[in-house]
Length: 476
Length: 74
Image (cartoon, rainbow over all chains, first blue to last red):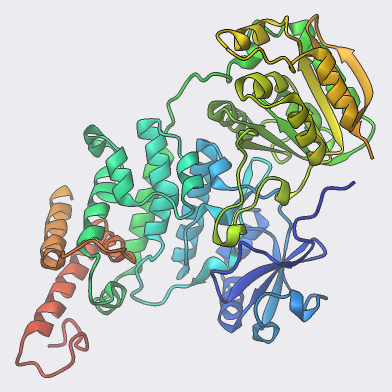
């Protein structure tokens, strides 16, 4: 089975807010339908120097104007006759959302957004919104996908997306950098982000002296409350009073300095040191590396998920034979370190997408009609899953029955590389300490029974006295 | 620089506070006004023009529609 293409044909459920520019899919290709206004803006962008340059550099997704795609009118978004032009976009191999990114990814996405805006402003253009959902990743390299956001800036217009930039980029970053508050649950909990008032309440008094807090959070929150019932259009008033483009440029440069200066200071976490812990002797690791490399060697893979990827050691082995490896771990710091290493020019930087994902509490369907943001599985199932040193955590720490775990894996991918850590292992003993439940289903024998029920084991080898590796293919 | 920011912020607060009746979901008016505060001298100039226009609009003897006058055209 090849990975399910995301929306083989039909409108993209996450693209409907911009009435004049909507994404849809035909046979796995990604298209954008443009109304008259959006088409005029697209053509105006072609005449600039920054826009084609950013596409050539890969900072904006590769896009080209095409004839009407060969699709039934019913598959186009809205009313087919409305559309004046069409674009085809390069496909993003795996869509991800900001509540799955690490700090450095949200920070780099913010900088990309601000840089593109600054370049657009210099040529009299603007980005009409400022949302991280407009940034996607080719591995660990960010790319801006919503070309419909670029437009010419009318004279006197303020930057209408400033608030959105704060709520979805700046405030989540400030909270993580200054307070160590994880932004992922906040962004997953509210697709519009963190309002200034909430951010103000979460920050402490002494934070007010730190960059970005007094003006962008505290004053922003007060001004928003004070102008909440403004009877006139502030936008109209500002336009009439001669709002200058320089004001936006200045603000963008200021925000860039603040964002670029933010650091997330956390040094240690539960698992980020795991790869180096004494539980993993060098010889065991070598056996594991060899097993994974040999299991994947037979063919090339399009999409691989590495669950509990930690330092990304095995994701890197998989990346040598795969178009894309999505390296997931619930540990934010582990993913942050993997991302930093990839960004700093690490091997396979365009083939490993690091994501903060807890498979026991995976990202749900969110937004309007539950279709705007999709579950992991809806975004494309992998051909192969790496599940190394993870089952004991799911079974014992997260109380998931072993048969459930195996069923979930069988629903996910056709091929599986999995490790079982037996009860005698130091780590399992540590996890079982102080537990009331005996976890009777967590035995080597039951694990193998459950695995054989859904998978055919192609190869199996011991990795150490207590650990065993399996390469398996789903039955049926 | 900091002093100018405080002055502009105070001016905006005066401009807005009499209308602080109740907090209602805000379409972003405050966010747009904040851009004047971080805008330095250019922002201050816009604030002055905003003030002027509101003042003109309040004068009973003017028979034109509020908001139709250019800021410095009176």
